Amino acid sequence: MPTNITVTYSSKGLDPLQWIQEKEQSFQFEFQETLAGLGDITAERMGEIIRASIKRPPATGTLENSITSEVLSDVMGVEIGIGIVSKMTAEAPYWALINDGGKVPPVAVGFFGEGNPPRKGASGEKWTDDPGKFEMTPQKPIEPVKYIEIANDELAKHIKAEINRLMK
Image (tube, rainbow, N blue to C red; front, side, top):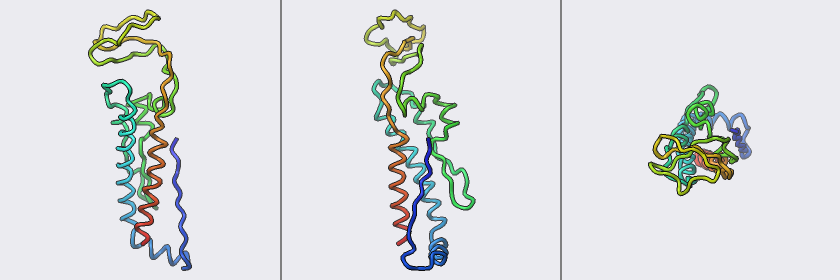
């Protein structure tokens, strides 16, 4: 689940309150704008990680398109929501399964483009009438992609780099 990122910096010998006041005036709005941009970059990065993990194209892009970045609040700082869980759950309810891995509950519908899978499963499942779609009983768990954790780690590095840049 989402984690808050906390960054701590020392005031380098100045009175902390004086240091904060000086720095606050110089970069508050620039930093908020930068964070909003990093939110967009992080949402795009999650999509890249998901696309790279696809084992059986074509993919619909539903999950990656459900991941967005939004400014939730800009009062007393800025709060950015990346991959809003309620939106992802509504548009791609399997988002946690892709991130965390696990088994798809049976019976699921598989998709092989406009054709059939290489062979019909030994369990004798019935094909659906839709082209390329068929009923299946998954036997192998989905490997975790960990797109949330990967993107979160990258975001933390970007935030620290931006803070360092603005503090100079």
